[in-house]
Length: 167
Image: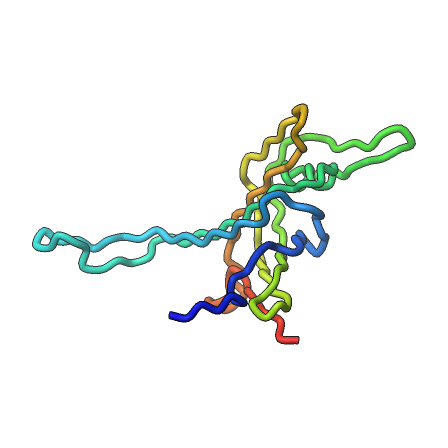
């Protein structure tokens, strides 16, 4: 098999949540699609006769390297607005009964050097997120989104799309 070095991709470009660029990230973006299956087994065989999917999941996660209150609000799933006056900027920390849905867009490079864009239609930040204030370490806000299907779209693209630009 011949190896085409141009097909080996490195790095991520930008990350946007609801159309807003979240700035720098640490460790790029990890997108994981997983499936749980049921294995049809019978006593007469040492392996399964078939497998069928029982659950699909899609996750996207990154670490927000810009420790702004707007990024902390996203990582901690806060609802209240950030307020600001001449002396301070504040983010109230409260309890939520609902999870806002977000549209995620990650951009990197395609094998041709053009844009590769990942778009996820429905993403909810419903994971724990902690950060440390330590000497000699930068503060990053980990954020992990559980992506859900958009039932209004065709079955083939209910989670989203990965598109390579041609121009």
